[in-house]
Length: 138
Image (cartoon, rainbow, N blue to C red; front, top):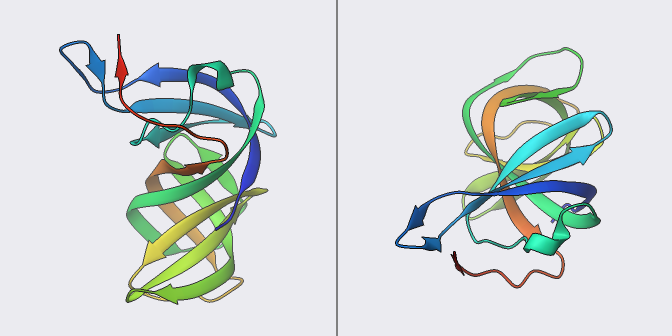
């Protein structure tokens, strides 16, 4: 699994019902980028904001194509280069470098190492070193 050291900027609650929050959005910073990650498992704790942490990021894409161009990470549009590929459970797990940020992109098609991919996606938090997780009562 690819881990990145990023700064957690803020945490915003997601779905809430009857005073319990079930997921959250984690805003991270790296280089000049500011990106939001969906934290379905509530891995990031509130006091993490403002500090640097090791995280792993997955990609839930709705559009994907091989396209040359500069690396980018802007809202939900990304372009990066495949730096590693492994086959797992019938899917190809691609590690994609987004200008220094490594993300895991799963696809039924294999994209070769060195390929430039442009994709529209939600970024999902897969792992957070030191996580405790769990729903929160508010």
